[in-house]
Each structure stands twice: as C-alpha cells, then as structure tokens.
Image 1 (cartoon, helix red, strand yellow):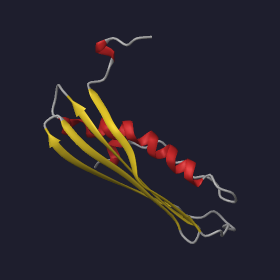
Image 2 (cartoon, one colour; image 1 turned 30 degrees about the horizontal axis):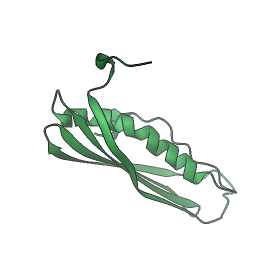
Image 3 (spheres, one colour; image 1 turned 60 degrees about the vertical axis):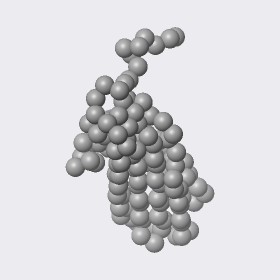
Image 4 (spheres, one colour; image 1 turned 30 degrees about the vertical axis):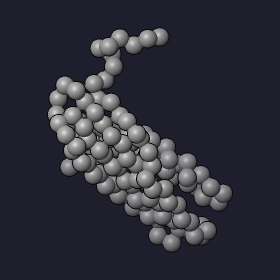
Length: 126
C-alpha cells in the first residue's frame, strides 16, 4: 500500500536514538508493595523555524530495590508551520519508544518488569 501525500504527516522525525540507558537493581525483593517514583524531563532546542531537537528522559526510583534512567533524543522537522508548536506531537511520537525500552531493560530474573502507563502528554509539558 502506498500512502498519498496528504496522508503523510508534515512533522517528520529523524535520528531517534537513546542517549542513556541505565538500570540498577539491588537484588532485594520487597516483602510488601513498594512506592515507585517516576519523573519525566523534557528538553527542546529550536534549531530554526522548521527544525527542533527534543530530549525525553524518564527517571524511576524504587527505594532500596532499583533505579532506571532512560534518555531518548530525536530531531523533528516540519515545513508548513513553526516547529515549536509541535512539541506535544513530538513527545507523543517519542513516548512509546521510551516506554518500551523501560519495560525491556527491567525484564530481568527476580524482578517484576516496569510497565509505564500511557501518559497525558499535555500534563507532561506543563
């Protein structure tokens, strides 16, 4: 199936890559449910009217059990509007890659994988 020009998004992602992937586990198993903190950081750099670099970072801490850091970066280009208006769309494109990587690296023996829920991108960039 070939897509028509009007079916292709004008927002294009290039050079998606992981800048950091860290997982540390203590080997301790919690005897009861443990509190997990999750924090996201978003950085953008406008290169010009039509080009923007975006970094999406996730830090997870489970005290005395594990810590996770995943940092994802990509370049976005758009032709028909200022690219800074597309940050939420860029993050929505990037988030599934980050979410998948967190699950992948935490799927380890004697460790329950971390599966991040789908997030509200509008709340993420406030």
